[in-house]
Image (cartoon, rainbow, N blue to C red; front, side):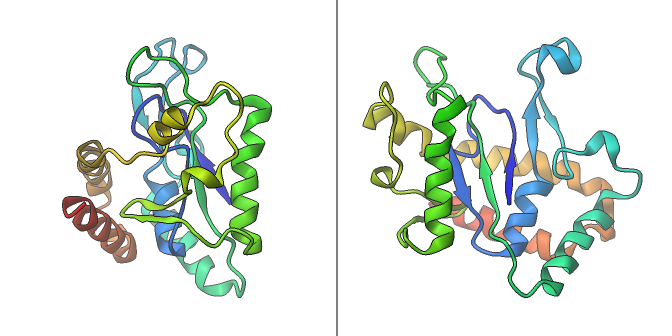
Length: 195
């Protein structure tokens, strides 16, 4: 399963794999995306978009929806792996897209299918999930190793701010917010603080 959102900075990096089902559900639950002119007339404003980019269509308490996802994971024998992708990250120098997108996105899908099939067993364990090793992504022409390293980097302080913002959003659900997701956030925060 792939979640994705349009973010020019921080997220996800290019691709990350959830270590477990609960972390994958958290990936979707904390999905935030930048607005486009087509959505709001304003470009680049980060907005909460959970659950799983369906905020405008969810007709009941989102905390219950997150709990439903967690329950479904316990009912499925062979749970799918969960990934988060972002084709829209921009570089820190000129504000240009690092990844060319379009057909080149298949190179990221190759890494994902390699992980699922067991052909790619290595990955970089980070507090925000498992990232590809730079050499495991077949970079297209125009994407240097330096740019690939940038798009696969983890901004510790930026992620800690991100967690503050999503936790503020989740606080509206009170006790209905799933304990499993709260624990995943705590693990992520602790990992980042020690990163």
